[in-house]
Length: 388
Ligand code: PLP
Image (cartoon, rainbow, N blue to C red; front, side, top):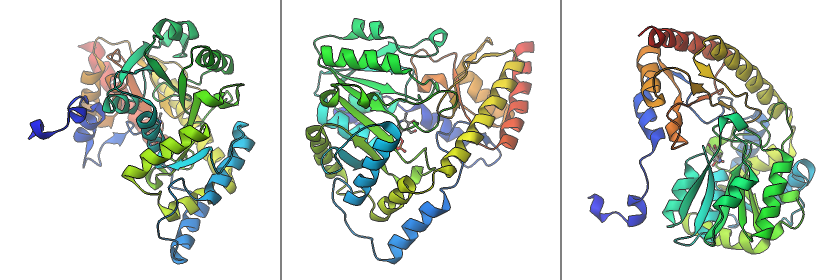
């Protein structure tokens, strides 16, 4: 059967996420700290906007680029929160979540053989999407000692004549690192100098703690070089609604829109109405969630440090911890033991990095009570490993 599959599909590596999911599926006894989605419910006023749209019969095709009314709400939000000026009619595209924007950008811009620079560790979908179009993902490794922040000189070393695109993600999944403004600006200057394109994934923009998020698209002269991706998934606990958006040069937006249309002629009509309510409506729901993630992060850091089995870098964004194991065990075996012995699921670092054998990603997307219990259970397994 496999020989009938396209080469495109055959070059994709097996997903490490799926391996963990297989072990946790149908197991309500397991405390889930491996998931990459908010545990909160979508705020009520957002749900009501969708219900109202359905009741009013707003259930048909919409335009491929997304409802103009939503693109206008996005333009207002970009100006208000990100300081990005964008024309709602030509420079903004509504997509199937942040991933829909990433897929459309890579499909539109990357030719077979083009090199794409991706920092490692990273969300694995970047690599997979580049491989899907026959592009060549080139890893630039980030170090724990540098707080997993990229360095512009490292990027320079990796740029060749074939380099087309650089993918950045801030705040970062899995490390939680937020790239400082000055580093982003240096990367922006390099993109202009070397005529590179930048795909900047800012889907965790609102989930930041001690620092401020900065959108590189505001940096001067970058308009022809940057595609910025946002999403409602994480900010408003709307992962299942599949609404994201991209902002870029009008020509890039047009190309992305055409590519997107091949798979899906439009985004879900009533989900777009809900998205308008999310962007234009009260934002205190976001603050409540971020405050809670912060409390959970602090609790997890404290508990992990007490165990003397992890080196923990304090994340300033997103809702993950990416500690390294100080024990004599690698993360795939460790995560398996956690599921079997402690009934706690976390992600092994190898899901995000080819150098992730000593790392695990632990998600804060669970209640304080569950996190506290999970930490007790992890501690017991850690003690057993230390003794053996
Ligand atoms: N980018 C990053 C870094 C992510 O972690 C995710 C989801 O986990 C996405 C993009 C895509 O999110 P969505 O397609 O739900 O907006």
